[in-house]
Length: 536
Image (cartoon, rainbow, N blue to C red; front, side, top):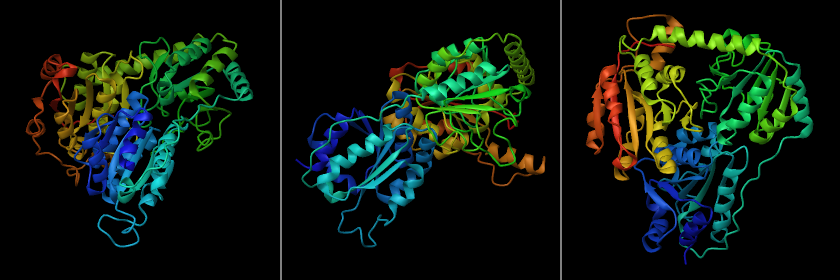
């Protein structure tokens, strides 16, 4: 029995159901094993490694399992690096297995062989290793999978020489998973004291609240404190973590908004330090003390020195704080914050009427009005995502996945991975630029008849670049290198066998959404043509 056969068995023992793969000749021993050995993980064929990685990422996020992508040598790994970064930012349990040429060629200048391949991937993973001996292969695979489960989760990569896959294997170690660490009692007591002393606390719900299924724990803490709850900002959002119909929901967090700046304690609940867009733009309101709840000890103090920090499992930390606080009365403060939130939503609605010009913002408000709070969503629409989030309802736990990485095209494969994990229809809201980065996903969703509906906001531009140029130099007649128009996106999808339609107004969008298919009906695409009006 070859190591390749035992590799498949090892993956199955770890509960790996799918491996997302764009194969090459270095993977031939694995392909031979797939042809001769029934059962084991299903290998899902992709036609580009970026799709392999983003599918693994989406699958890992939505399933709570390890997402495995099998890539081909240095060229395949290079193609997947951008979306590996997206998985790293999201702290997604993604394992990359990379087939490389046989060991006899590694010291030489051989085709698709790079002497520093692991160094290329190392910035985007928490564990990187090359299998050195065939008899250690199964142990190395298990170690790689295990590292993706160690909290805080990070991707991992293992390179596997082709000749080792055809050799006699060693013994696979038993399956073991990374353990969660509970928060220190002293840290919880100190945090509880900070919360008791605060008269104007604000909570920002981070992605780990959704990841640990801790929405109810966060709600209980907020209710005991009388603290308004924001969801982390558009630039940091990886998954939605608080119900929009909760009485204390206050909208998206914006460090420039006046109410967070009036807080006397800002609780970052289950999230890393907010990403910095530039050194000149504050990621948090200036001068407000911070209580940081994080599963990564490196995060509190990364950018701002906190008044308190609780490191450990997010759900356990929230439960401990809810039990430890004295629940003082703060009726005036949350009422002020929530009134401000209602006023902001009213202003946005007035700025983007449902019967106005059909801009991206109008399309997103229409979409939010139609789909309600239960739909399973993947968002990768760059400038259209913020308008959607301002109007969106979320009443279903852990049902929205996004990326803060800036890796265009991520949503195309990620939506397919989410659909495989949840076995229900996914609505993927993507931009026209994202489509052009992620076209190979069409082949995979069509071949496997995955229940993904791609809703493409088509303004024919790299609108984020336009917005940046407007901020730097004001309105101008020409925005170089931003025009990406000319692609008939619905026709492109149709060429892959995907049912597609084009709409250019709110009524058409509503009608297209009303025709939504079931999970057994395969992929769909709705191309939404909008004007180039930008609303931020």
